[in-house]
Image (cartoon, rainbow, N blue to C red; front, side, top):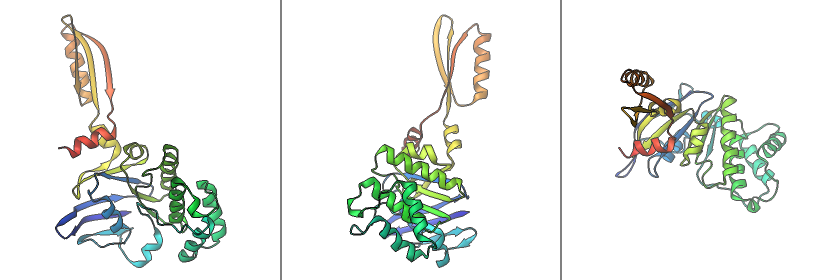
Length: 273
């Protein structure tokens, strides 16, 4: 389990995080969403051990951060930092040696095949291929915790979808995945939990299913006294009560439609409050 407990972080007068808490279990994917400056990248850097919080802590499988936990983390920054004059396999071998990966040659071939990466000079790769190479680097040492900052940012839909599917595959293997994203479609597709952030605070933390369920409505369309009417309610129990009242008043139910909101709409509603 990864536990984030009351994290706070300031840069001078700017408060980047204020009392942020959440947990992620093995096999779960958690998405951080929020505006630029909401504190997403700061949160990920703290979890990755790159910067320290002013207060609060992160617990990794019940233990505080220590150097040994670095070997169990794979971190993907928002901007790829690659060596253009290296071949893809050479670049991965360089990091495999740093991580002390056994049978690195076989592991590199596995990742090249899985991510459909060509073994040519890094400087010749497209933006999508460069992103996949950065992801391959994070997977070389088979880490337990994957921390990805905007893994699909600026990529074409096909590459973005493949990376989103990969994150679900990694979670299915028992990995803990925490990522930030602006694209709500991919968050909605792969996240088990979400943290909606604004100005360093969590406006919502919990399961994506619960968040969508809490914002789902039911539209009832009916006729009563010769007029066509409609109304929306948030609870299924209310639907049955209203249907009974309409029928007992001589009305007729035309349609009952369940309206499930998109995460993007819920998000904008939350941050605008």
